[in-house]
Image 1 (tube, rainbow, N blue to C red):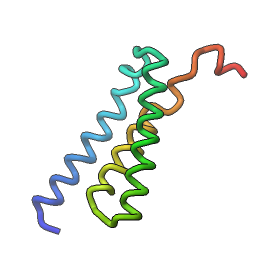
Image 2 (image 1 turned 90 degrees about the vertical axis):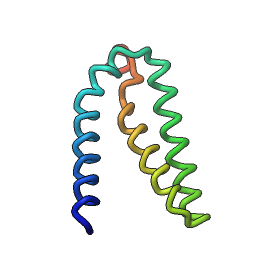
Image 3 (image 1 turned 30 degrees about the vertical axis):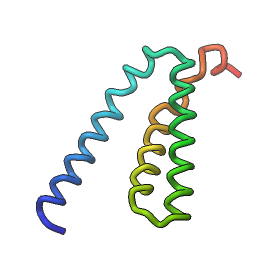
Image 4 (image 1 turned 45 degrees about the vertical axis):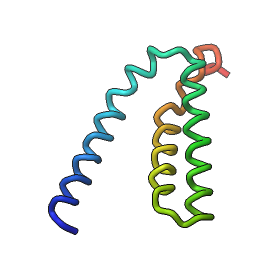
Amino acid sequence: MQLTSFLILIGILIAMVLLYRFADRWIKKMDPATVKKANRAGFIVGVAGGAGWYLLHYSAFMLITIIGVIIYFLFYGYDRTEGDKES
């Protein structure tokens, strides 16, 4: 691996960590219906990308799968209201 590729990967990793750390504040301010739709969209994108990656063996679908999984887990658990958490 070349130095430039390594530095790009490190930069992406740091950006993802910062996004995950500060996204909590933004997601809590969003409407629960919007968060639920984003969660479902991330799941659908992840599954469709994974299926395309498996069936078509095209590397772009790997990136689509990763993006879908990140979106899914970013919005996971925020679509519940306070009343739903008790049960």
